[in-house]
Length: 313
Image (cartoon, rainbow, N blue to C red; front, side, top):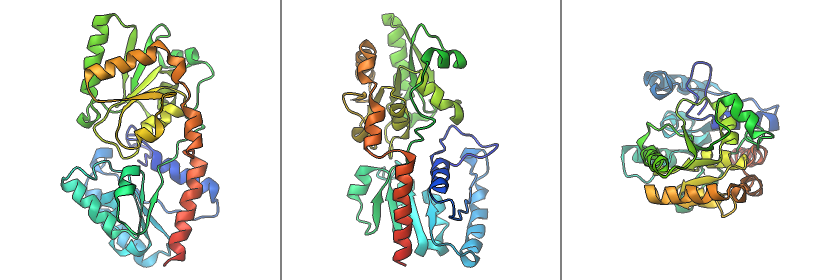
């Protein structure tokens, strides 16, 4: 979520994008980013133990107005900074009734204020100081291509076939890539002129090009907190097929995509429908901007939240 040199970048960089956008809005603000490089990001889980000591030192000797955490584990390490702590709940596992879910709920209780990126989680929360603020999309990088053929040539993709992009890592079972691979088998048997492209090893810097080059983006996971992939695709005016999880219902309408149940038959039918009249569904960018999902708008709202915390110490 905050990729640096040597880190894997396919897990997304929306926290880094949010920090950089906030710096542009508030150039005089002093921002101290503490990056925990855990095992899943190519580091070690001992990074959390080191972070406990480092953060405790910072809270005792640093003069912070706001502490903003972007993960439950990180929030739990901010024990001595909790009076200034804002926790953004990015995790989509909140209601899964597992150990991770329990830790997220403890982190929510511990934080002074909580930002939810999920509308449903925000509505269900009984936290007194809560906000609904999904991460903004970088509308400069994720934008419709001027020349799709040129972008495809750059990526080595065929201009003679319809491109279906599954941006998530197919090795994450909760993303349901296995269903799309069954759809791919069926499409070949039906003679459909489709090429399926899977994420996992696509660098973050290349993802806007893949979104631009695609005729369709598929996001049929079991759960999401928000649905960043959906928003990035819509910002490129690329149609989306998604399961009704996270904020998918907020973002997808009959002009930019289709909501489906995660099974082979429904997914195949939805792909066929969109491919039959692809231009009909290329109107997502306007809808996102109307919802205030650009980086500048989100940064302004975040700034208001920071000042609200400072005013209510």
